[in-house]
Every structure is written in C-alpha cells, then in structure tokens.
Amino acid sequence: MKALLASNDMVEISFVRALLADAGIEALLLDDFTAGMEGSIGAIPRRIMVAEADIAAARDLLRAAGIQAVGPGAGPGAGPGAGR
Image (cartoon, rainbow, N blue to C red; front, side, top):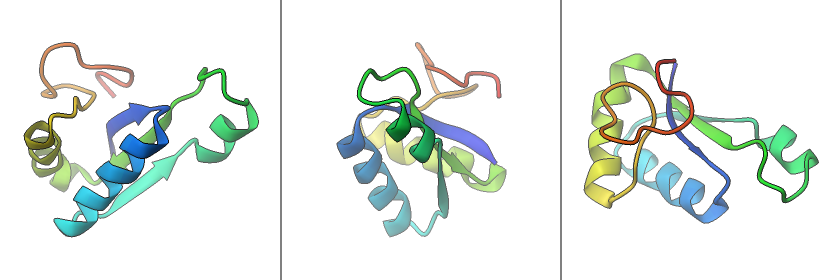
C-alpha cells in the first residue's frame, strides 16, 4: 500500500474516497481513530492508502480533480508521507 493523500479535511477525504470508488480503486483510510482522539488541533492527518498497482491511476484522478497527492511522483510540493 502507498500513501495517496494525508489530510485533516474530512470533506476532501470523503470526496477523494468517492472519486476512487467510482474509478474502481480500493482505498484504505488510516489514522481515523487516532486523529479523532487528538481532537481538532490537526496534529495527526488521516491518510488514504491505495495498492501500489493503483497508485499512478489514483494520482492521475486527484490531479484531474485539482487535489495534491503525497509521495514520489505526486508533483511539486508533495506533502506528508513523501518517499514512503
């Protein structure tokens, strides 16, 4: 699994998960419980993970939607999780 997105924005997370589901790409949400337990200070972002085989297609979907993915190949300014 590769990190696709790290965010504290629940609307963005929901939108990305819907985009992926519509494209038939299975996604896993990590850190949801931990982020919820720390409150609303935004210290722990939730991460959306996808299979390595789907990462390129998932990044293309996000790019087309105007959302910045994380990690190598995600473009300039890749956020948390870069290189994982």
